[in-house]
Image (cartoon, rainbow, N blue to C red; front, side):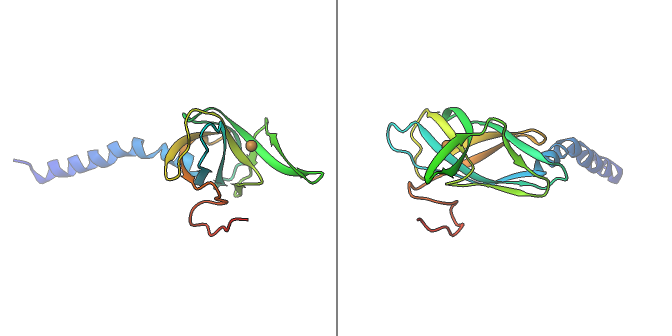
Length: 162
Ligand SMILES: [Cu+2]
């Protein structure tokens, strides 16, 4: 027979044993990665852009320093800017600052990640993982939603094509 005292002890044990599991999650919640998306690629296409919003909810500045994904041989950090009337893409080798309390948007025509050496075609409706590396928050893995070729923003964000 199980006494009342035994039940209380079991309950306390369950609560206590759950604590070490819950604790590590808090660290990565200080930096949130939302709305990650990419575009469907054509057969033979070897590069694709990746877009998302990085939100730093902590009181410390952070920096997005690198990324990797099983779909690409390399993932680079890029920016696009106008240079004498021409859109130019540039690799950012020192990362992208994510200041304390700020959001940084990676979007077409601006900051983005670039999947180099795609190992397979990206098809609309699929999801694939990408792991982002931050100086303070560490590694964060999110799923990238593959959208239609002409997409200009994450699904449901109300963006209209140019
Ligand atoms: Cu690029």
